[in-house]
Length: 480
Image 1: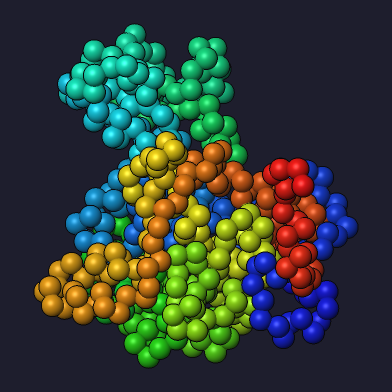
Image 2 (image 1 turned 90 degrees about the vertical axis):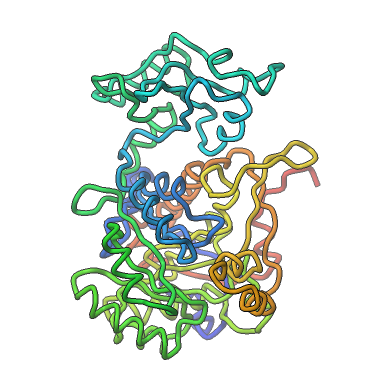
């Protein structure tokens, strides 16, 4: 990457401050652009979901990993919860999607409470042997008593797909029957998952992130306090593939000691991620201590109040650029953590030298995030969202403490940093968001004359713009 005006390298810039110049291109089709990150991890897309309690969970991890990204599970959750989540992720099918399932004795209200846990808009009704016997959608609940059983309203005579079916044949069946979703069963009729038309198409474009055992690749965050050895060993025993050492201010003695300790614990073959940092010296210290992947960002997140409360941090584009310069020279990798609110921000993070972009708040307002879907006064769907320094996150982290100690911690929570994230029309599922990001990445590479992400980094020419220049690039939804 280079700046169009070389002196701009000395400015402290964020994503809104910069843009990319189009360049001569011989890229025949944007669909031929290779989006595999040049990484020590088996990712097929340069997307990582942040380890936030209101974003990263079982459904998010399964869905994003199936499409080639990675989800970092939060460090604040009990080990019993993480064990179940990791088990669920590892046993997920690389193509068939997991559905919401209920037995036919359950009520309509129960089904309505759960139906938006997935983006399919349906509940597969099963018997005690987990064989599908019907399907329920919100349409089946219209003008019906909410306490009626599913057996009284569900669609019966259910067609299913065998788990040996080809994607093309499955799509043809859905198209012919004018259906959005069909259950997939094994030779015993037991439910193995579901297929949708969109899901089938995505499976032809995206490849899942798999470890050497052909299981979904998993990552989990660990704080630097407490019994570090026990936490890391427990996560590895669960089958977690990547340990992410995480604290808000990473460039400190305790973190460097933790990196050295965990590196000694896991050996040299396994990758290790640590953060967060924003300076070149921090990058040098982290790499020398034994980290492979550096998590970059202090304060750019939409739910982060660090900069407003402390004045500390660094504009994210410059942080990513300068840390990446240092990391790449030493063979390290960078995750740009925070500040990505639009596809252009992901493009700019990768152009600045990041190997992956981390997404947090953007994905909080999707079906796959952990919170329950709610409706506001106008009937619009939303989810509650909170930052990791909010009072709610602090409560999650300190629930095992005595009330006195809990209240001491809450007293110094960094501001409010919590609110509502609407489910945006057309982006209700995290897969919709991934499609949007991938489309932007492919087009950006085509404009830059890049056949892959490394060429994007090598060929990117960055300019600095005014706020008016940024606003000029925004679409105008109404006549002016």
